[in-house]
Image 1 (cartoon, rainbow, N blue to C red):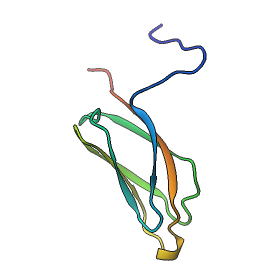
Image 2 (image 1 turned 135 degrees about the vertical axis):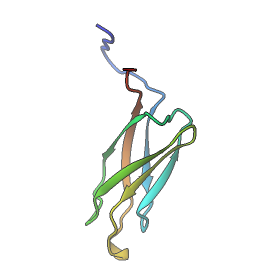
Image 3 (image 1 turned 90 degrees about the vertical axis):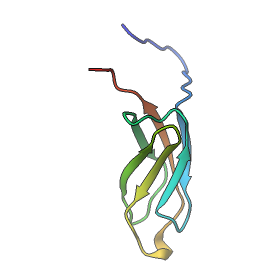
Length: 90
């Protein structure tokens, strides 16, 4: 067994952010991001008529979360949580 956690766990590569109201993207600074990082983003708010499109990695700096466009009046703030993990070498 590689990892067994009972109770709460803390990860320095987990966090939360939000796409600001009226915007379709947000940059999240995190120096742990590499060119191979797997970044999972989970929406915790209603994005309105938009959809999560993709996450762009910027190694050593962070990542940007992109949403599809929507009418300017229908772009609410969208909070999300994220987890950055590294794949095992092959």
